[in-house]
Length: 408
Image (tube, rainbow, N blue to C red; front, side, top):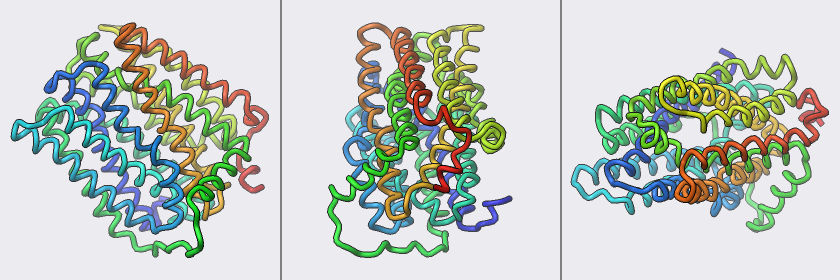
C-alpha cells in the first residue's frame, strides 16, 4: 500500500476521491443547466467558466501568503462546508422556481473563491503528512483520484443529470463536499501553526515570486501551465455547448463520451511513476507537453458517427498528458521549495494556471460568437500546441531526471 499505510494521508486521499467525483457533476450540469433550463447564450455560458476561475486571478497570490501564516486543515474543512452550502442553494432555488442566471453566476463565483483557499492549502498540506521521499507516490495517488473521477465522473454525471435533471444533480455534488469535510476532520496529525513574526503581504508575495523566477525549470513548468491553460479554457468554455448544439448529443451521451475519452487519465495515474523511472522525469515532462499539444488538434474534428472517435482519442491523450505533467511538476515544486515558502509558491503556480483561465474563457465565448464554435476549437488547439515550445526550449531538454536538481 505504500503511502496509504499512513492513516492520515489515507483520510486525505478518501476525502479527495469522493470530492473529485462530485465535482465532475457540476462540470457537466452547470453549463447544461444554463443552456437548457435558463436559455443562456454561448457567451453567457462562457461567463460561468470565467466566474469559476476569476478568483485565482484576483486572490491567488494573497491566499498563498495567508496559507503560510495559518493552519491548513481548518481552511480545508471550512472551504468544503462552504461549497456544500453554495451548491445546495441551486437545486433549492430551482425547486421553488426562482433560479436565475444571476444566482448561478454568484454561486459559481463564491465557490471559486473557496476553491482557491482549498487548492492552495491542500497542495501545501500534503508535505506535512508524508515524508519527502514519498511525495511522488502521494501525488500520484491524488492524481489517480482525478483519473478515476475523470473516467467514472462524466458517465456518472450524465446518468444523474438524465435521471434527476441538471439542478437536482448538483445536490449530489453538495453531499460530496460534506463527505470530504468529514474525512478531513478525522486527520490526527498536529497541524502546527507557523511561527509568529512580523509579516508584510507584498514582501511575502515577492519572496515566492523570486524563488519561482530564479529556478528555470520551475519557471518553465509554471509558464507552460499558464499558456496551455489560457487556450484550454477557451476550449472548455464552449465544448459542452458545442457537443450539445452542433453535434446534437444528449447529456448522457456527452457524459459517456467523456468517460471513454478520459481513460487516459486513469492510465497515467497508474503508470506515471513507471514512466518517470523508465525515461526520466524531465523527459516525461517534455514528452507529455508535446503529446498534450498534438492531441488537442483532434478536438475540432469531432462530429457525428465515426467522427466521435476524434473526441475520444483527443481526450485519452490529453488527459494522460495532464496527469503526467501534474505528478512530476507538483512533486518537483514541493521538493525544491522551503516549507515556509510552499504556500506562496503553490499559489503562484496555480495563479498562473487558473488566473489566466477567466481571460481564456472570455476569449472562447467571444470567438465562438464571432466565428463559430468549431473555428474557436481550432484556434484553442493551435494555442495549446504552441505552449509546448516553453518546455522544449527550457533546460528540461538537456536533462533526464529531476531528482538531482531536487537534491541540489
